[in-house]
Length: 306
Ligand code: FAD
Image (tube, rainbow, N blue to C red; front, side):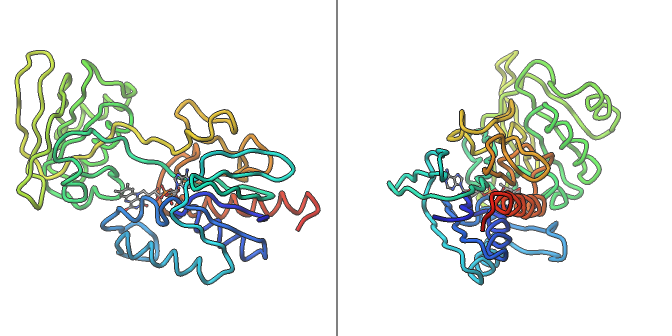
């Protein structure tokens, strides 16, 4: 059995595994796809102390760092369920049953997609999901934000300081964002808000986004907007569906953790984008992975182990 079994091989899981191994704990890391969201990221410019890097490069560094320690890496393995007992048991899709004294959940999240033609093709070529990450790439250009909830309007305000113009497209007849955010957006001269707009297609020249098409749901008319970037802000979905009923989840389906990263189930910790942490970034995921790992160590000491 493991002392610490980490589920998830993104920045949170990698950080947690290294911290656990450095405490001399028997550590395993189970990942559907090592690297997580970072593997899909093109440019990274906000991982402090590394001025600029690329997703696959950072993943290779993460993996090399984990390999420096005695960590049992089980890649391409998906966890299906978590059961508590004398030891925690994780059942994997491949049929394996893994046992551990503590479990550290770091299964991350995925951006909700529009599911329209062109979106996948132009991901990283104008279609973006993270304004903190990719906003500066569109300096002086025209962009759209899809979604008029809090994250959409926050993104529009953030981007309006950097880009030339922001068009917000909201599906509903009104914005769902807080009043104060709507007022702030309205006060900025370069944000246009279009409601009842259903995005139907991302248009490009084969290498970069050039615009989008949408249908005005009130009139049924088709419109085209020329732009260089499209920020999709229609939600972040935590990969925690498989934990429903096992640990407490927030309204958004995120795992609720305390200051030491412990979940509602003693001995089970969580870190990164799958939790109710305030913001979702690589540096934040790594920090919370370290916190949860030290939390697990603390828990084991109190059990009289290791
Ligand atoms: P993830 O990176 O999502 O990793 C989750 C891990 O869990 C993966 O290994 C996955 O395979 C695994 N997993 C999921 N379910 C299971 C299961 N049931 N069983 C086993 N394993 C499972 N942040 C920045 O700071 N800077 C940026 O420039 C930046 N750019 C981004 C660009 C894009 C396109 C995207 C999508 C995100 C970007 N982010 C950026 C956000 C950043 O990638 C995330 O905040 C960070 O990766 C979260 O780390 P994590 O370890 O919590 O989760």
